[in-house]
Amino acid sequence: MGEVTQSLAKTLLDLALDIAKSTSELLVDKRPVDMKVESKSSPVDLVTEMDKAAERHIVQRIKEVRPNDSFLGEEGTAQAPENPSNVRWIIDPIDGTVNYFYNHPYWAISIGIEIDGEIQAGVVAAPLLHETFYAHKNGGSFVLHDQKLMQLKANSGTKIEKALIGTGFGYDVEIRKKQGAVLHEMVAIARDVRRAGAASLDFCYVAAGRLDAYYEFGLYPWDFAAGSIIASEAGARVGGIDQKPIGEKWSLCSNADLFDELDVLITSLKNKYF
Ligand code: IPD
Image 1: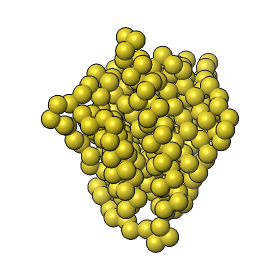
Image 2: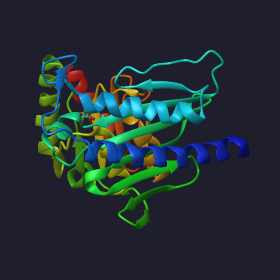
Image 3: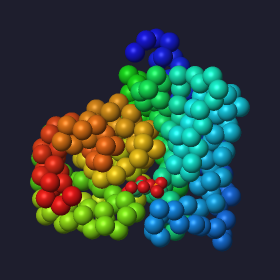
């Protein structure tokens, strides 16, 4: 990566950190007691009025200073300006909407920054956990917990039997049944399994060594854009399974030593159940 791109990534990361802060305030301070909620792709796939308000806020703040950037947002923002720059923002205003709806603290604002078609920086902010994870390419990965800044380092050297594995489920009931079948086998092999409810944060937990790995079928770019750079800058390996790229149906984020072993296992479970 050239110096110009690296310096742009750093500048945009600072902007994303500032926007994540104001969005956190919006989502925490203005959280309505009686929240308006609608279903999206299925009855269990929720979007709240606050998902929409937060995405509007993020896009508006970016456009004030970067009018020629493009967007891909979970709540529908996919704007390409007339003279597009080489920057695209990939946004999930609330990753973990179901948790946010229930006031369960495991949700996050996820902002990924793509430059020339490659994710170069990202922020995942979890206001109720008092944590903001961030990284830019070749700059390391960090978490700010209240006022304390720590560099992140993924685990190494674990075997599946000694690994704590995270996963998640999509919203389509037929897919969920298959994900359940895979989980049924995984839980008998791994040390244990967690389903916390916000994929972007799960990637950050792999980065922080709080999980050894995370896998899921059916993630979208806004679920993993920011988390993937945070995890890889912490030394984790991020990709798809069965030699496919991330997001082409399967996503795997793992401590680097464990990746291949999990790839083989999940590929065999995919072939059995999907
Ligand atoms: C969801 C969460 C969840 C994952 C789902 C995602 P959303 O995002 O990240 O943990 O399992 O696949 O769709 O809908 O809350 O933004």
